[in-house]
Length: 294
Image (cartoon, rainbow, N blue to C red):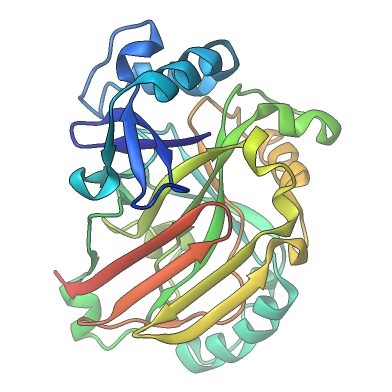
């Protein structure tokens, strides 16, 4: 099932096999009150936790409700006020290799500790959606620092937990979406460099895990102004999805609706005001985003 948040954070089910793609508003089928305020968003976290209980109701509402062309609505990021955004570092071998050159150029040397797989946190306030621009901080642009794109598969946590065994980790995954981890290349802490507003674009939809199946065979692509920068298969992840979920949960309790960015593929590069970034993941969808200066 492809779930979308749209307009005033209503819940929709998307049919992108139709021409044109269509959406049905299934908010009323949830069975509990809907609150459009993203800061309170308890209805969304409850959906993430209890999706197996409401899936049939949502499917029935999607099959019988009035559909609208997707072009008539404004898609929002398919996540509301997660307690945290966890992100993976150094999870594709070719990206680790290329980062040696990036750090030599931007830092004047290689930080060896940054070449190992690990996780860090991004601010939830960095989230933005399909209708939003990527906004580059004026002071960073003026200082001539590079700001890079990173296109990633993003895990959306369903039933949370701590110390989750790897063999049952997928039971804690609601689904997947596409995310960009926008990054300032500097000597600052990762969380600082990656947490500016709009530095975590997400979308266009959330595809539930039962529809994705194996998350280890998805194609990720990204181009800037029509020129391909990134193209990788998630089968190349050094630490695959179950191991990521399990590892993160040993350090922090994962809560319903939390997000995990699974790591940047090779091909990261600078973006500048005026650029257009297009990213896609097979079976999930595509984001086309304008880049501007704040």
